[in-house]
Image 1 (spheres, rainbow, N blue to C red):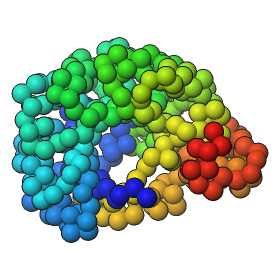
Image 2: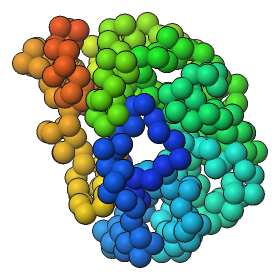
Image 3: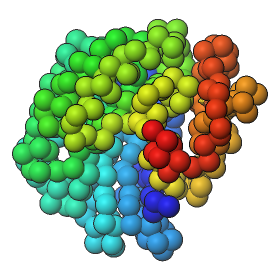
Length: 312
Ligand code: SF4
């Protein structure tokens, strides 16, 4: 089993205002103080965790960003990932300083293949140019990059082009995540959340593009019944155990919470060969659109991901 990681939500301030932001409803909750973040990091180490993901909100706009990252390194975190909209990474001196502080994995968000699309979705003019420059800077500094693209109604037809763009900049790990309909995405549901079945050919075409590349490509919140022939890319295979520390709450076992309260299965899933390894969609999607698109896959039930790999 993968080692547990700490998902540390540093607060909710952000210099983007994405149309699908999943924490937009928490923005008034503010941000953690430096002392609170250091206390969280210390607790994580006491629990034996050595991977931390700084997320939020946007950690790169905090005035204490270098301080909290170097503190994480100093107390023994080995993997320090920055989940970011990538805009601050456009500045090379900033990039060098954050790497020197101890960050060693970056997850910048790219939601379009052209400025018009990415900037529309992030509601931030200039954001595309900045995140692309940020990726170029990280590549120049030989940093590990794992991009995140949220699949939405305005961008799903362009997933192959987005994938192509990422490859052209040297990205070797990428995640395409079906939009989770909470926060802004729930408010903008009809304009932002596409039908899962309409997305399918574009997801498959994007994955075709990476078949002969040395690239890890994952698709999140997009169940196996939409992924015939591409099942090995389903993110269930890759999600490690996670502890989440938010403002005012700690979830020591987010895997359990996600499977029991966040995602959902239909009664028909019991007849699907992927039932035991599939988490199903985030619950808001079938609550709004029903289960008609989710067609159980016949066959002997797979019990483990190793079986999936062996049978593929
Ligand atoms: S278990 Fe349900 S959601 Fe998962 S692949 Fe099968 S039918 Fe789809």
